[in-house]
Each structure stands twice: as C-alpha cells, then as structure tokens.
Length: 438
Image 1 (cartoon, rainbow, N blue to C red):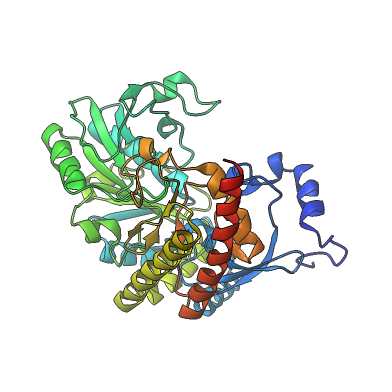
Image 2 (image 1 turned 90 degrees about the vertical axis):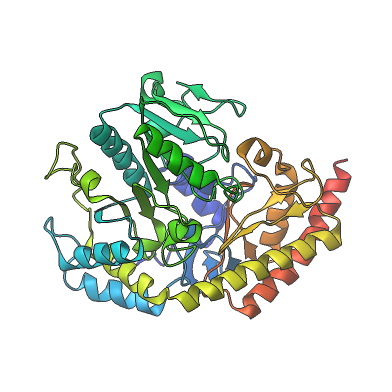
C-alpha cells in the first residue's frame, strides 16, 4: 500500500476540505484547525530535523515540534531505527515486554520521586489516572487546579476558573456535566491556596507552558509542597511538557521540589503516543492489580513507543540540555530584537529550554505575565498577524497565542539565524498591520 496515493491532490485547500468531510473540523486535535489565527492549515507530508514540508512542497522551519513531543528533531536516525527494529518484532502483544520495563527504569532513574511507574497512551490518560489514583489513595474527592494550567482532556480537570478567583463546579467545555467538576477547585496560578482536609490532590504545571510559558514565582512550588503536607493532600506535577525537556530530571530537578505523583508524555515517546504516571511506591501500588484503583489499556506500554522513547532519552545527556538552554535563550533574543526593531511590542520569556510569547503592552513594556489573567491580555490580533507573516517567511509557529515555542537539538545556529531573519521581516509586517488597525 502506498503511504500517499499518487493521485492525491497536492493542495492544502483541497485536502483540508476533503478532511472536513470525514473528520470534524478536518483535524484530530482542535488547535490544528487554525481557528485562533484564521486561514487554512497546511498539511504536513514529511519532516526532517527542524523542517517540515507540506503537501504542496513548501518547506517550513518548525517551532511546533509536535507541541514538544519532538526534541531531537523530526525523523531522528536513532529514533527511526529503534522504531523500525521494534516493528519487525510486532506492534502490540497484550502482554508485558522488557522494553516497557527498561523505559520505566530510565524514568525512575532520572526522577527519584517516581519510585514506581505505570505506562499508558497519552498525557490525558496519565492525568485522568492520576486523579483517580489520588482520590483512591486519600479517600478524598476534591481536586485543586490552577487557572490557565492545562492537564489534557480529562473531565475533572476541564473546569473554568472565572476571573482569577477560586470557583467550584464550572464546566470548562460543553459535554462536561456540573457533577464532573463539582469537586474541582480552580485557583490563581502563582498563589499558594489554603487547603483543607477535603483535598485529595493539587495538580500543577510547574512551569505553565499553556499560557505563553509562565515561570513559577519564587516560593510557589515550595509553598504548595508545604501546604499539601500540612493537610495530607498529594502534590501532583503535570510534567507532560516539562518532563525531560527542562533537564534530565525535569522541573523537579530544576526547582528542587519533590512531587508525590508526576504525569509525563510527549518526550518519553520519541514522538509516538505515550503517557505515564510515576510516584511514591505506596501511592502507586494502590493501582490494580495490587490495589483497588483500576487502570488498564490494550496499548499501554506499546513496544514501538517504548523503543522510541528509550532512544530519545539516550540522546538527552546533560550536555544536550545545556545546548538546548543556550539555543532557547538565543531564539528569545532574536525574536525580541526583531520585534523591538519593528516597534512591535512583544516579550519572549525563557524558562530553561522553554520559550514563551506575549504580544502587546497591556502589562507594560517588556513585562511578561505571571498568571492567566495577565496572560489573557495578550493581543491575539497582533499574534495572528505575526503568525501568518512568519508562515509566509517559511517559519511555522503554533496556531495559537498561548503556546510555547519548542527549540530542539535540530535547531542549529544556522536554523536559528534563519528564523531570526524571517522574524525581522514578519515583525515589520505585523507592526504595519497593527498601525493600520489603529
């Protein structure tokens, strides 16, 4: 069977329209539809290193990198070789494998708080399982989350938080009944909440990478640890993005705060679907088959995903992370210079290897957000103009104003300089559009 039939149209517009006829919105993850930025999405045919090519043959320098799942670069030889070799042995067994054990050992070695690890299929499944596990272990129902953090499509965590004040029982999307979030408390990020003995767990992105990259304030994570300890609640770090991207031990190593449970995804699958929950032995052994909290999955611990993940982690040495930190800082500097020269107000905050973005000057010149209420003041129209101008210059950003920019090992100095040159032109276009709009 051909990967793509020879008679397939070589047109983004035609193929997207055809996709819309069989896939809701034409996409299998909502943000890909370009609704936030307008226009028709490009359809990727292939990728290599820091580049993707669409079906029309247009090449883009890619800062999406599968929203952080890719860190070595697309089609990295070590990862593709591991997948190819694993595939010759079969793609799924419904039985345990040495590969899943070896990946779990590597995660546990890198993150000491993960005394036991359970693999699954996605970050969403990981956070959903962590909710059930925290409630089952503590015998409590209430979950605390932070406004602007994103923990995947788990009903109990899809709660809206109002205008920066603590709220209960407000579904954040249609299809989530009030009962699903009745025990979810949403509080402002970077403020330590006062907990009580009803709280099973506090879920937090240690770096808020879904609102333009917001760093934890000094003492915030430490304060959460202390408050959870005070009332006997569990502290859950959502490291689906930060895990094995910020460094060898993720955010826990970077900030020196130990979580009770941690959820992972993205990097640990080398670009294939995966997720996992890791944590204290006594908590994790509450999972079936040892304990009463159920979890199962036909494809959990998939041999292709575990092979790809192990190959990716093997490349992520301390020197690799140091290089990523240097490149993230360089990308931020290039984008900042481009926007400043054009008179386009923008901030590109850096937390380790993560680069964020904020457009406009509602918070003051050069000031980055510290919580979701501040992040929401970003000028989305300004970002739309910059996004499309960058696309026209051959650089792909995420089609949403609140995403991170992902720098990987394939983003060489030459690639970064090319992105900077494109940004210099795009910022001029976006600035002109902003002036025209008044």
